[in-house]
Image 1 (tube, protein in one colour):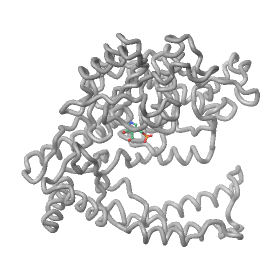
Image 2 (cartoon, rainbow, N blue to C red):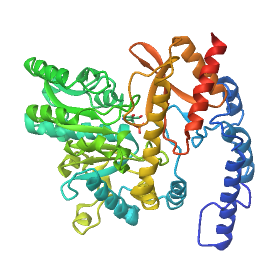
Image 3 (tube, rainbow, N blue to C red):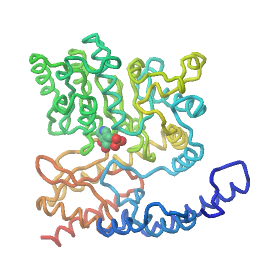
Image 4 (cartoon, rainbow, N blue to C red):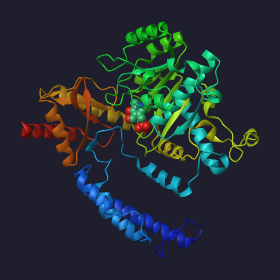
Length: 482
Ligand SMILES: Cc1ncc(COP(=O)(O)O)c(C=O)c1O
């Protein structure tokens, strides 16, 4: 190890000065890699694998920070994805607000953990305060509801499904899943979600011991929203066949199309059959900040639980999500006491331990990013960011709908547009690969068996002229292939 590398932060001014220099050098390495406006270097997988493999694993003697930073700057940074580029638009994977990069530095420096009050006093209180605010923001009563910051939409969804299953089994079979495991009827439990919903529902059902067979996929209409009539028919048939529908998931923003399910129609059916209604708003939750479009998700408050992802439309660094529940009892499924960690006697005296609401034990202080972004931007600043993203999707959709070279079957409700060149699957696939090699990254998916391209527009710096330029480039590449 180099003699100048401090092992830990401390109150020593000398250490602080050395650490500040490390941060300055890191920043300059980052900025040196901002070579142009492309999103990616365009390197292919085999060449990159070789480069990365040559970096080595664990040397006998440490090389010191400067040397390691130099190698990282030379070999790794140039081939990282530049999410801030307006040429990056394939996934629900966002660029990040500058103030939240500073939050990450604070989180890493202090390394508080969210499991018990004595591992993060201010962190615990801030997360609780943010959860309280989020409950009100999404239309839940903060005095009755509860929530927890999670690692992402998949974890938020599985948390909701565990809570829904345990709640249903207690009510329907007088069965305590936490104590006894799955009830004898477990093979007959069913969860309902749209055929284009996120695969985290299938993963959750597998992990929870009920398998993919327990996930009933409801067909969607021409706007990619759940067909509520088909859902009603499915429920009727399933109940007649002796099955137990315990939960339905309304997606507020499907991954590909950004379509928003009819939660009002689904709520009516869930009430009729005694089911939990979960809102997977991993994508669409950001619309709450928009004065122009927030009504599109107003039905979110009639759901029993909500997944909110901050590392998508909210532009926070990975990872940051929340699960919110209307009735705080739902999160009791995660409560468990350990003598070493979360003693009940401490909790009676106000030392809250958030481990009792989470699937995780050690957990990051991600609530700080939400706090710093909300305080920095306010509703006004966030509203402009969200409105720009949705406005750009509307603009792009209009442009390609008017162009005979393209098809775009679904009008966007959020900020993604699925489209295709009419010249066929192979051309669409090749155009995407060629764009990637030029440093423009766009998405690809399948609709009705056809290869489609996809723009997921989250970047508020993207301008209409840049959208026009990409449309032009796609057509040029198509011509070169025909
Ligand atoms: C609708 C929806 N739900 C859930 C998820 C999973 O979120 P995460 O990737 O944060 O686990 C995604 C991811 O894209 C999504 O689009």
